Image (cartoon, rainbow, N blue to C red; front, side):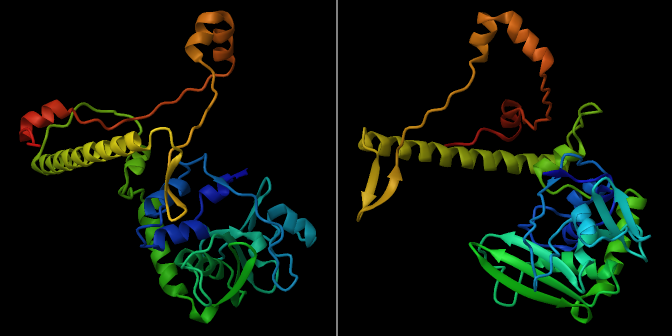
Length: 318
């Protein structure tokens, strides 16, 4: 695994472009993620080591960064920035856009993917996020006419796709990305978080006192209160059903139907250090190791005071 280099953090790359332009609810890397990444607020993000066997027509375009430059005996062009082993081709028109230099070492742009079998990878269609990634490369590298996509789908199923420049929505893409960068990076207008995890990323620590409740807050809190009670009723019912099944199964490993297992009740065992016993048994060594190998974990938790909430909205009858 390689840490994402500083220059990639500060640029709109293909992955960021897809995150900004995608409107698919299942794509977790959305505009909020893109802003945090470009601003350098996600330094621990890692990328997988590129696969060296990404070949199209025997062209070793799957080689990555410094390996690719050395293989082709190329010197970095003026628009290629170098930081350690990370090299990016910067868009001639927009210095805040860039792509890995290995994408254009051959006659066409190459994007290599290794993925599981999914409905998005068909005979002619491929995922929208991949479309935007390759379109971004065409936008940044105007001298290339085609974007080649090679996908290893499942076990050994190699599929090939082509995105032609004239069929890519480059002008629209350019306008959207430039406007987004102007607003959310240059002006710093924050992108609203859309998940609990994104809220924690946006506001990792409390810096102000309690907020007095308002009508919108009250409505959302009441909605959460009723959802919680509905989930509790479902959870209690689930627990009762599971207990009944376990009583009937007793010492059996599971339940089968027509020779096929439909319920399993298996034994597992895990070994870990009993830190309380370790601390009591050898406190000196325990404290020494704690000082030498500290791991401080901090988090911010969202916890409604349910007794107070219940008094506000009334107890829900079972």
